[in-house]
Length: 117
Image (cartoon, rainbow, N blue to C red; front, side, top):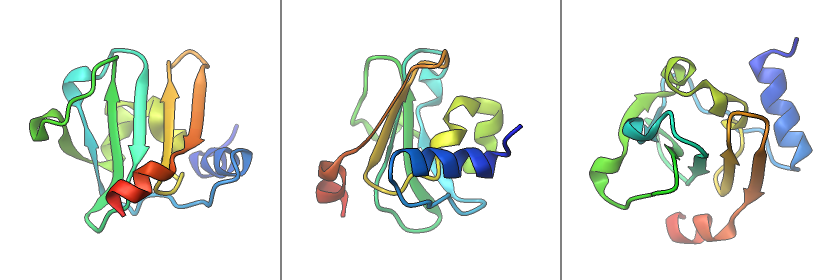
């Protein structure tokens, strides 16, 4: 069985992305009130510590409201939203969309870097 590190490396290789896992103890922005819905969305923007740049939400509705996301240590995703763990080593500019049942879309979005770089 693959370790998380091996799985993350495989995902990065599969999509031709650099391997840039979040630093231990870094924070993700996650819309906890949406977890349990599908699909699960993730986008990684350029960031500075203590943030790792990942923003995660679920369902069909996204919001720009600053209260939409809560800060969460990356290690706590194991308990809150473990389906996203394989994708967290993708570097800034990458997005994913998963349904927790095997469907996954992963892509690079240059606009993310332009808006947040």
